[in-house]
Image 1 (cartoon, rainbow, N blue to C red):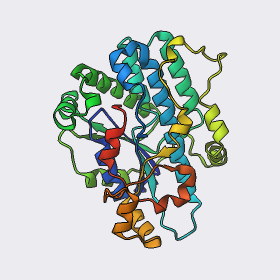
Image 2 (cartoon, rainbow, N blue to C red; image 1 turned 135 degrees about the horizontal axis):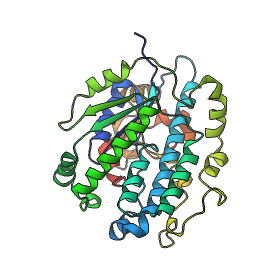
Image 3 (cartoon, one colour; image 1 turned 180 degrees about the vertical axis):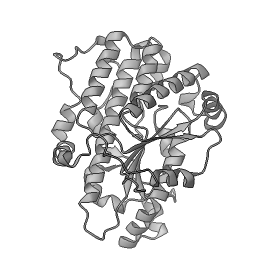
Image 4 (cartoon, rainbow, N blue to C red; image 1 turned 90 degrees about the horizontal axis):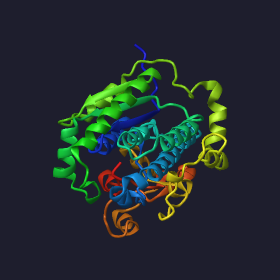
Length: 339
């Protein structure tokens, strides 16, 4: 049976499902580049926990735009890889640790909790639809199925991050339910969704094999050959990418709740141009062979930490990303927002 050429995978799951760890392992096994969520500090998080009704909508809009830019950058990276010289070592694909598609899970939960008004949620959904309109769907979605109780135990017993200390079990149960709703929708899009039971974690090799053996099927929406030129023109046009994040009042009026004047926020297109990319081992080896550096020099560049890290690097400079070295996934994930 023919298998499909998987180029872009979204790894999804509840908080503390184990996405970052597995995504790093899969990147190594499959020869993919991993796009982590931006490691910039969430400027809304503390205020959100103190007054969710006041800050839920502006925070979710901020996260939605960040995830949009991350997805665009992943697409740019794939296109850059296709332009590399024949015989050059290339990434076989890209895997994202959460994506713009699952951002709606957290928005839906906020709406159900009463943190969004109907007006605010309609504005969010309209902007989400506008952002998704020019983007192709992923080739596959990997969902780590972990019970809300298990996620709760990992958050409070294993991770013990300050920003997650107030997360109750009921919130995780709500996210779990909203994820089920999203998975149903993805099935309606004819996307292959690999659901992996991950309560006790599992074997990355088995998951990688399942991805590699996905049967061939029609390209997801947006990847049709006839759309290739239009997609490339869009993702490499910074002005058009930024303009897509602006919705005119003639579409949906901007609700007052969408603005938090007391929170200083940089433009998402500026914040997220510096993405944390994790290169698979094979590409790191190729990069080292092309540009060898001894451990002392590498430690010096890393501020004496002695570990390989990827410095924030614009995906526009994808040709030079091979001069970067890998970063520790858990360290980066620990700096990211709780969701």
